[in-house]
Structure formats: structure tokens, C-alpha cells
Image 1: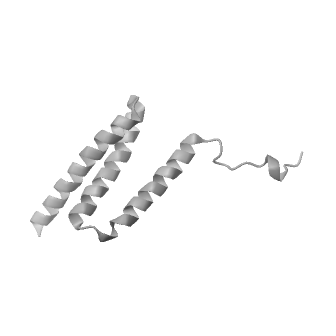
Image 2: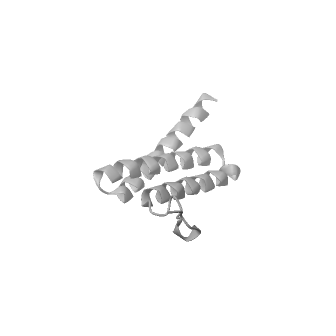
Image 3: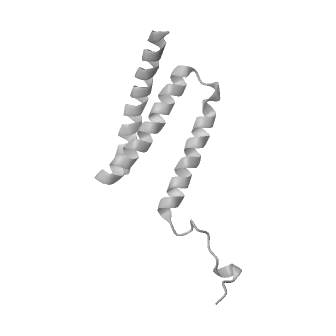
Length: 92
């Protein structure tokens, strides 16, 4: 049987996980593109929050609540980014 155009579907149509991953990647890229006018402190804090959100969501999804994991990860990541910025500025 030869597939017709109507029977072809998008490779990501049925996969919620893949769509969420692509959405998260696009969102991260858009957020990082917005860092152009930020100070070093703002960039490092925001980058820490973004990395913390992703890590927290991943760990939270394993533990059963990705939302709370993302929130906690964002806070910890932002604090870590800020502390890193302060240590870099102390070296200057």
C-alpha cells in the first residue's frame, strides 16, 4: 500500500514528550536571546535560574512533581548565578 498525502503525519504529532522538549528548547533560546541588554549580574542570575529550572523540572518529574521541582530549581539556580557573579567580580 502506497501512503497518500492525507495518511502522512508529522513525526512529532503523537509524541507529547518531543513537543514539550522542542517547546522548552525554543523558549530557552528566546529567553537567552533577550539577554543582550542585560548586565553581567543579570545575565548570570538569569542563566542560573534557567539551568536550575530545567534541572529542577527533570528531578521533580522523577520525584512526581515537575512543577515544584522547576520552581525550587529556578530559585536555587538564580541564587547560584548571583553568587557566581559576585565571586567573579571579587576576582577583578
